[in-house]
Each structure stands twice: as C-alpha cells, then as structure tokens.
Length: 100
Image (cartoon, rainbow, N blue to C red; front, side, top):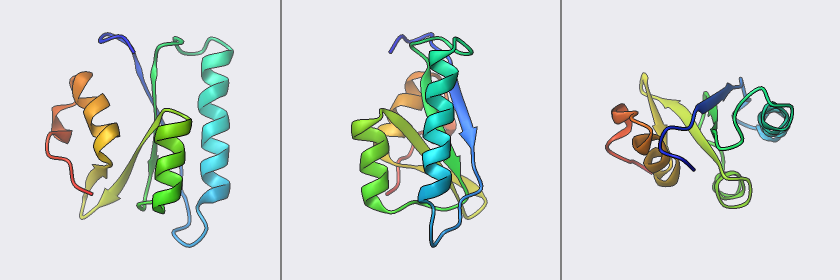
C-alpha cells in the first residue's frame, strides 16, 4: 500500500445480532469500486459499522480480505489495531490510541 494512496470508506448500517449480510454487501461493493476503476488499486479499503463485529469477522476482513473496519463506540470511532495502524499511516491521527 502506498503512503499516498486513497482510503475508501464504505459505511453500512449493520444489525448487531446479525451483521454478516450487510458486511458481505460492503465487501462486494469495496472490491467492485477497485475492479471497475472507481478507486485506485492501491487504495486502502475500510468498512464503517455502528457496532463492533464478532472477532471471526474482524479476522476475516483484515487477514483474508485486507479490509479495515471501524465502529462507533461512546460517540467516537474505534477500530482493531491493524486497521488503525493502516489509517495512521495515511494521516488519520485521530486513531492514534488503539483499543480492542
């Protein structure tokens, strides 16, 4: 990932109890943006949801799909360590203190 690459945020309303359907839709949309040239190939892809998803979904998005994820928490955004590190490299310093 280049230091100057774009960050693409896909924002989804996901039910806390069953987030998988919305997350699948977001993954498809993010990859379509890249495939059809809407965004640069080296763009960092990031999903934003209202709730923290289960750990297995976090691991899938980050490890398998290389997609970061952020969620709302106490009026702010939180994210897993990997996503926050990627965003910090892009200059998003509001994510400087990772929490799990």
